[in-house]
Length: 250
Image 1 (tube, one colour):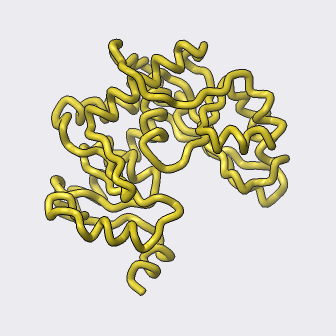
Image 2 (cartoon, rainbow, N blue to C red):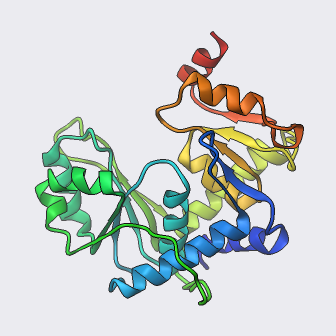
């Protein structure tokens, strides 16, 4: 099994459906996101990554993040995510526990990494780049207990607490989201979900649903662009926290 299998099924079923659209105008269909993931997986292999190698992924909400996650998870590489505002000592402790083999980040992310001693010690630094992918996506079979996404809390007691989302957990999460937020609520499957949460976007990719992805640093102009979308792209649902909902309703 591999949690990316569910996404590949959606690519085969509706390759030209929009997968992710962002208010800055960037977007990708399911096929384009799949092809970008293939290209990045080839790039990561060429950089020396092997199945099972943990990777620190430091990318903002966007196409690079999801294509990189598809490339790494399908290859069987656990992904470590850290919050940049955590104290450097706790980030360093998280890195000591996981021991990433590579650091995948944008140029801005690399500047952040240079300020963290633990990140500087990671042997491979990689910036995602698009290229023609002639190879197939390698979809390695892993056990349900194989780590998929690793995160750490801020560690209020002094020691960061690790949270491991295995491939089995991610597939079960998809099934729960599918039941609770799609089928049972009668959402229009051919209409997008407007989301600010990374995990809901993963769930939508697994379900074949378009995500209108709101950037962290959004502005009223982003709301205007969403309101100007054609009916087929206007969101049928909104997944967000109370703070965001309060802002757009005020």
